[in-house]
Amino acid sequence: MKRFLIIIILLTTTSILSCSYQTTFSSDNINYDVTITEKRNSIIIEPSSGETSTTGLLFYPGGLVDNHAYNDLLAQFSEEAGIKCVVVKMPANLAVFAINSGIKRCEEHPDIEKWIIAGHSLGGAMAASTVNKYSDFYSGIIFMDSYPADSVSLKNWEGCVLSLFSSIEKISDEERMNKTLSLIPPATWLTEDERSYPEESSNYSVIHCINGGSHSYFGSYGPQDGDFTPTITREEFHDEVVDYMTEFFSENGWE
Amino acid sequence: MDGNRAMRKIKATIFILFIICSSIAAESQNKQSLMIETGLNFRPGLFYNWNWEPGYNGSAITASLNYQNNKFIMGGGLEAGYSYLGFDIFVPIKTGFVIAETEKIEFLIQAVILPGLLLTRPYPYFMIGIETSASLKWNINDKISFSLFAGPRYTAIPVYSINVAPENELGLNAGVSSTFIINQSKN
Image (cartoon, rainbow over the protein chains, first blue to last red):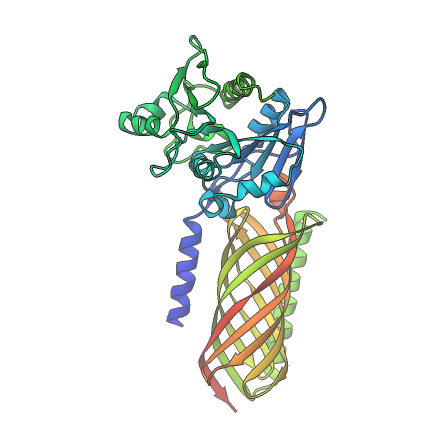
């Protein structure tokens, strides 16, 4: 009996420590002209009307965040850019358990010829790992408050990188930032005043830091433990993220 | 059907099952055993939101305390696992019946009700599942046995389906378990 109780206590404790963040997203309250298709291991968000691009966006959610939490952001991006977005549902909401599952999800969309991968937090780190493994498959990567794991270098990768940070605080750790810069292609910082892309058409990075956001603002959830206090609204934050994502696609001719 | 009515029906079903099993157990008093069962479950999915979409849907580890009286078994415990929605905990309440047995092998069928929680913060979502399974049990010795089981399982997360997106699953639950007898008496 004692053994039984120990097992039960261990199971309960482990499970409770692994709670995912709920999303505030509701499929009934989408304000964008998009179609959302729910599948067991992915969520497909595509424009309901107009022409859809042959470039697609594959998205890896952050660790222990409900995979629907990014639907608002991606619905806005999908409508504005005319891009099909595929959110990869991760086992237990942890991308480390299915790092390369994105490839299988891409194969389910033969209408898409070129794939850009994006990831938030842990999802971004795992996206970098799969890009490192399938470097010819992906043409670009978007990091959201994220960077490659130390063992993964995209320095010489032929693709293009957009890195978005949610607040000044996120880039204030100089050592971490230098490490990140050493793992991605040569970087140019973009600001509202200075927003010119490099002349290269491949092997470059552009980085932008949003003023006053917070880590959980990339999704519709939170606040997350350790979040900085935001000074802008989530809607303003999403507008800026979508603006930079759309520009990144446009600059690379992925429309 | 609204949430309260569904909950009342679930509670009533659990209560009726408990009464039936207790009555059956009380009637026959030849061989009684108290057992701890631990197992590993795999959850291949078949229908997702009522659409045919076969695919893997997670795994779980289980621990339960079972009581067997001759051919009747009842028990309850904990199942901790994960799916594409995160980690979850079920509290399986089960009843079963041995339909064939030899000295070493038992073949039994079980019905399980699974109230549970999808572990999210700031608060969890209530989940409910029902399952039937067939199990082949190999008695290694007087104290330990080993089982293989499989059967259909339906799970739904009612409030999540309303608040976020539809979420129900009809699939299989299959796995292996080992049983340790901690107390046995024969009248």
